[in-house]
Length: 179
Image (tube, rainbow, N blue to C red):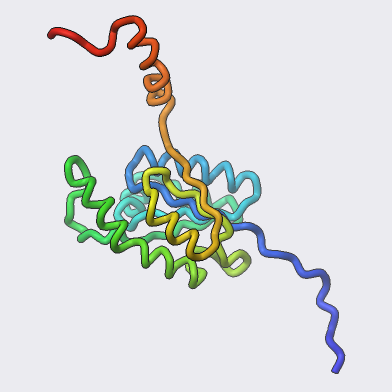
């Protein structure tokens, strides 16, 4: 039996999974990174918690804005908390604990099943995870053999103040004394 020549086999384009901490400043920074990677021609899956994604699409046109990039996908995952559970202030720790326990196995399943990809690039070839997540994203990536990069989101104001501390200490402004 003769096989028909099907031309050169083309590898699917690399797919990067971007997974921010579910908080506005982190999501905004990671969205900008995702857009830059998509602009460079990579296929990007932006994974958000259901709660944050619903707020994002209700208040922005982000899905329309990023739909111009071929291979850009939005996917969501549960943070493991009930819809009515508070996710701000002193209850933010609940999100961390819940995600570590409940989101980790769901993330693993989504990666293995190809649910984070598309027909032309079904498998994630690299994960860029929020630097605060730490353990559970590293565990899943290492178990599946997917390279992972931890990206620490921070504003210019944060960097400016962080790098000003030595000067403030040297000038005697810190630590503050008196009233």
